Image 1 (cartoon, rainbow, N blue to C red):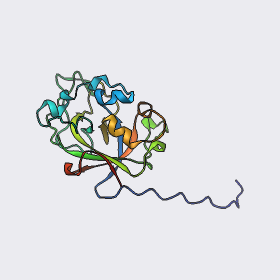
Image 2: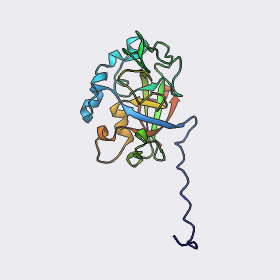
Image 3: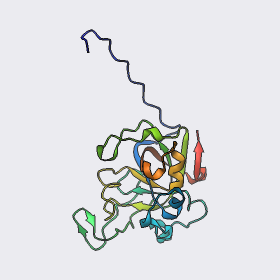
Image 4: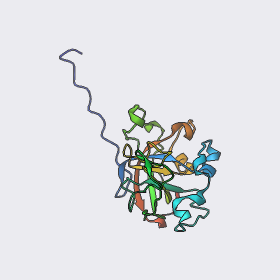
Length: 210
């Protein structure tokens, strides 16, 4: 570049967060729930029965037509988590539990969380450079109810929800599908950068526009 070349233009300002308060822009969202995900071609056999979800199994949340479709689970190291992190049952092998951990310290069962795809998000999986921001659907949010936990030390979960990516939320495939656009199947997208915040469940589960 010549020494007298003009300065490059300033980058555009970051897109504003969705309207409202208390958004955290540093989240990523993935999917869980075999029955809900099957119609979208995403296989999640480890979460095939929502009745085994932490909050449902403990009798704190009852499943109904709405939260069997619009549900979520937050990482136990995330800012959306309330209570003590999940603990290992029967010891651990290094950083991870030998069996599925107990999350009895979770106190946000039944809480509702609003999620928006963050088109300015910079996070990529293990730093591979793919942020997936091109898939973000504008002016759309989904509200899900927390029925489960995403433990940082789950034996089958060596990355999401761990200290490598603590601000993480799992959402139903129905919810994820509403936050993205384009022709790529959601199972091939895998994750999105996201805004997330707690909201009162009275706003209603499902899709919202702004």
